[in-house]
Image (cartoon, rainbow, N blue to C red; front, side, top):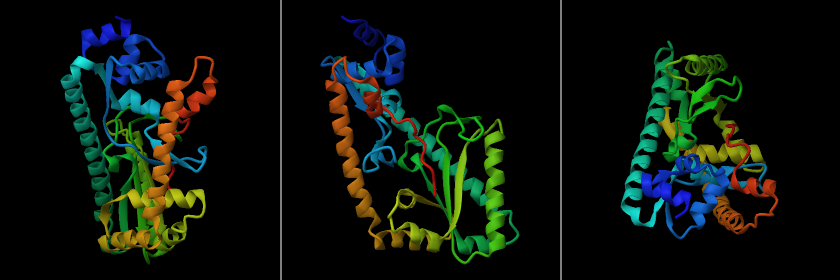
Length: 299
């Protein structure tokens, strides 16, 4: 029995990063070994979803990357331990769903507090809707410490992507809304008890209509995020109208086609990685295994 199999026999099922650390293999070697072994069962938890990436031909790829999916969302174990594999996978699924729920709740409570503390809260409630997006809406949030992009401050996992879409909101109130959100972004980042990253954007519904033309990369990303986004707070009528515009512009079907392409690309990438000989160009292989930039901007 190899060292890797002995470890699994002694410890039982492990998630990918535990297996990689215990065996001392590189992440790629660990993934390839587990995926290709007929003595090991793997179970992937969570959801794969579409990401748009300018570095990928056709822009379409799946998230998480193959590497991150293996490290954080894959349970590996011996064939005989199927029941234990399923039990560990269920525990992880429950944990990431709870993390996502808590982060959405934090985002909702934050926005609600800001608006209710404003002397003209009724105007905001009538003329602005707030949408939550990102991996939390897929139940795929995590709390792995990571550096925030602009400051390098360590934050607790997945960020909070908040899109505020307004209609006929006076310029002064637009400026106040942006200022309130910016201050809260700083507070959440610097507060030792929070250490959350909140990304936000405020835009008029007329800008949304322009973005739904879907004719360049930034517009495609903006349309995709709004399509995936869920109602958080504010005007439900504006939210419903925005979702109606998505259908009117054919965004769901366009994104569905891109997702199909991303699924096909993932299958081909995994096949290429599994079959690659030891003499293969490692840089080329790693471009299939993980992405250099997992963050997605909101526009």
